[in-house]
Image 1 (tube, rainbow, N blue to C red):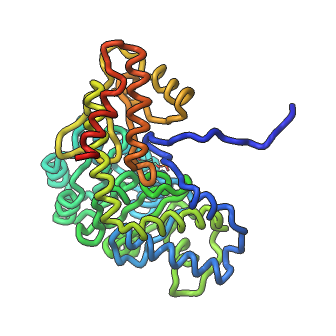
Image 2: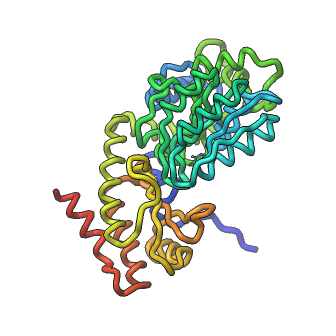
Length: 393
Ligand SMILES: *Cc1c(COP(=O)(O)O)cnc(C)c1O
């Protein structure tokens, strides 16, 4: 066997993540590795925490990236906030609520599920019923932006309900942070995590996390130690915190953190509110184009994510085949449907640096081409034309 260096193709990533990583971020990652306790690196860590506070819109001291992907941010929240036997209410309206259930059960949580249809937002009335029926519950967990369906839930209302019933909130903001309003302090969200590879357009493998006062109080009151040594925030913070002397906890993924810093800097330069506005504006253009090509949006008006366009294909189309053609012939990656939507739907991401007029037009022209090849009644250029009308208006 003759081994060679791996040279990946140059794709355009417009799926549910990872999203496009800019050359600026990739260049940052290639800078020289230094030590994880080097004073220069410690300064970078402080800046990363500060930039993350800006994105989470929080003053929480405990704000840092977990050295592992978004799922590890999720696991960190459950590991720190629940103890064996604790009752946990989890709202599930798609794939990721199910992952939360898996984690909470493995940690010995007594899990109560609040179910909504895939595609719908979490219904606050159902969540409130569960909170009333289970006054001993300790945690309410929700997915702010459900990437499997494109549904946006009302995190602020759900957090207020949770607090009324003495629960702390765990909020999955993997797909919301950086693309749409997320206000950790104003909405009083207690434990919130995100991911580097979606709207931040960083390289995959890091999970920004923030814990507020209620979460810290809950941790203080624990009767048992956090089950996970690696994720125990009391230990991790001895490395990340600026206050006490830095102590070795684990070797940070130094170069991945250079990349995260650069991607956070890019959003900071743009302004987080401008980034939200860009995602909202490009979503409108993408929507006009996809609908002109005969694709229909899943979910409800007013509760859709701007950065994850979940659409049904016309009947009889082979979505997997068409998606493979997009990748092979046009270097474009989009996502397929998950669960009940598998084989019938596409998930087209507009995340971070991928969210531009240029990429919307590229995507619509490629999608138009593959759809028209299957069905001659579809006008290959209809999507681009509809998008151009909006862009030129
Ligand atoms: C992608 C995603 C995750 C998991 O992130 P990984 O980096 O893949 O572990 C969790 N929650 C939501 C809503 C996501 O979209």
